[in-house]
Amino acid sequence: MLSHLPPLREVIAKHGLSARKGLGQNFILDLNLTRKIARAAGDLTHVNVIEIGPGPGGLTRAILESPAASVTVIELDPRAIGVMRDLAEHADGRLNIIEGDALEFNPEMVAAPRAIIANLPYHVASQLLIGWLKQISGFKSITIMLQKEMAQRLAARPRTAAYGRLSVMCQWLCDVKLLFDVPPSAFVPPPKVVSSIVQLVPKNQIPEIAFEQMEKTVALAFSQRRKMLKGILNGAGHDGEKLMIEIGNHVTARAEELTVEQFINLATLIKA
Image (cartoon, rainbow, N blue to C red; front, top):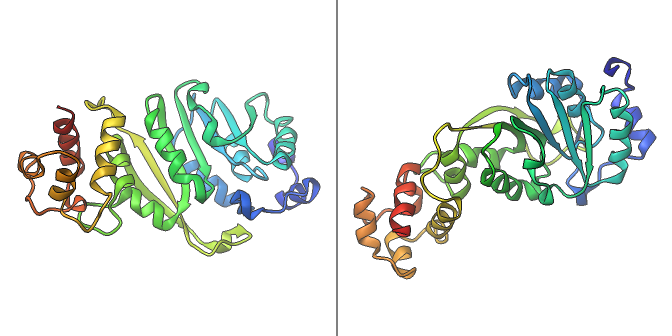
């Protein structure tokens, strides 16, 4: 039973699981906080949950306490694999362990409906997120902890400094909501920055433009933030002024002034 598990500090000591900077490890030992994160993901009944980098398993325990159908953990650190194997003995067959790099893991290996709940290593967070967006079909939600600055970028609105490539790509496919902050003191060892929990819930409509086309268009637009988008488009062989007029924006606008809908229209026109 999960209630009989030892405290996380004992687990860390048993497996020699001191946090390693190279792996981006910062552990949360407060089980009340990990339960709050798991609850923030919403109703997990019949949902197969994926967790990245479970470490000593505080969040894993909280997810297993929920009605989730299963929990699949992806862990690169062999020390934490030992922790997960111990935890699996108390999980009634609901815990699946994959040792490897999360960047190489295909979420579609886990049956839909699926959800991600994770405290992501900050140095690979954007790569992981873009990969998940490419396979967003089948996801119920993505509830992740990020550096606060990055979390704010996902939810940023046009005409703000934080609005950029990730803002557009996330908001194109998902409804993005900032949930709550987590202070450095909640971690062992404490990071130098405040963290935030952010949730992405896929939109119901099917995108009319291919992911690769949208990604290419957005990357081009933000490649030179201070430059007028018309000039960037001209440099890429397009009629920038004509395109800006067709999407309903001023010809002197920069990328950060376009709405997500205007980016969709721009990608569609460029493809045509």
